[in-house]
Length: 140
Ligand SMILES: [Zn+2]
Ligand SMILES: [Zn+2]
Image (cartoon, rainbow, N blue to C red):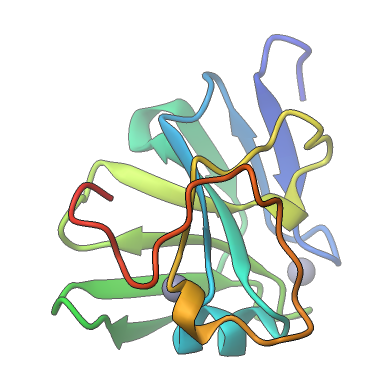
């Protein structure tokens, strides 16, 4: 891992590692049922990068689920430790969503939008300065 990277990260056991060369194109937080279940907590926090800007080492397993809008999200996780590391959406094949919790250093992370707020559990508290949408806004 070189200091030239914008960010690096890994799964819990370290079998899956990644390095990212440029800043994210956007960042988001999602409370939909699928993100809650796959993360095991109140929401998923994702930083979206151009596919060409991220290098991933190590084998992952994946699971496909279909969103409300009909797109297919493929969530990739470490087959050994189960950490969810990144995801892809078939509608935007040149973008990879990295789970913010797997970053080695993530002080720069701040969601541009909170989506599926209507599915947010009562115990999950958010930064109220972030634009919040009850479902998926048309622009995201
Ligand atoms: Zn692992
Ligand atoms: Zn979601």
